[in-house]
Figure: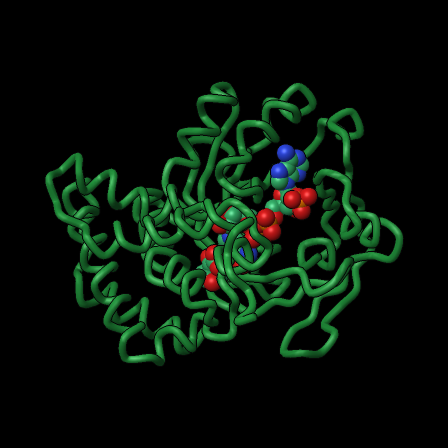
Length: 298
Ligand SMILES: NC(=O)C1=CN([C@@H]2O[C@H](COP(=O)(O)OP(=O)(O)OC[C@H]3O[C@@H](n4cnc5c(N)ncnc54)[C@H](OP(=O)(O)O)[C@@H]3O)[C@@H](O)[C@H]2O)C=CC1
Ligand SMILES: CC(C)(CO)C(=O)C(=O)O
């Protein structure tokens, strides 16, 4: 909606549901700070055949485990010169896309902007951080133009050279908040304001920083921790994390790509990650028991 409001031609691709029907009929309404920020006329395509092949950039924003299925069906309809840009959370997204689309230009970014569906056709923006996008070897002018449009629309964005750092920087925030808020059903800010929550955030982030270092990504533990805590109080405090939304909606989560990825990489490097393992196990337990979970005291 923000890009479209800058005059860019933006199409969305999603399977058909009540939300997409409402958007196609009445446009997409974005709420910011409780008020209506804008309603933008948008088209959501439901079938790959409806896709034209002229897109400069294709942004992948499905859950990590759905990338393969969605992109495989779209690929025959995409121009080779289109940049495929993942703004998904977690580790392994670039690798998944490159496997499916080896001849395309692939870029990965991380966004500290967040939103959720409030009702059909209406979304609320509740996280207001920056977006960083990794450079590509070619077609950087397209990316530069893209971030200019994003920034002009109010979503502060940058193209940056070190893509692994971009991914891990964003991952640290998800490691800190997504699993914890999904288990406690708290907004990010409420999680970090609890002394126990803050302690758990410190533990999971410190474990992840050790694993990142073993992977060759250098992080100053205290600095990354300070950023994760600050952002929880400020930019993303009001947000319900995407994983909390998944748990509320009884959906599969991206835990394997976030805290679960820290556990797997920790094993590879013989680094113990008990706090990330606990968060991963609890989320998997919740995911596996939606149909039998207790929701009433009676
Ligand atoms: N929400 C947030 O604040 C943020 C999310 N992210 C990342 O962005 C990505 C998307 O997150 P989010 O928007 O929360 O996820 P959602 O699950 O809310 O949205 C994903 C969309 O993809 C659609 N979809 C799933 N499978 C298919 C399919 N096979 N064919 C067509 N459409 C499909 C879903 O349709 P349906 O509704 O029918 O299931 C849904 O509309 C994730 O990687 C997340 O980590 C990053 C930063 C912030
Ligand atoms: C917006 C943010 C950073 C935290 O809520 C996020 O990435 C998510 O919810 O998945």
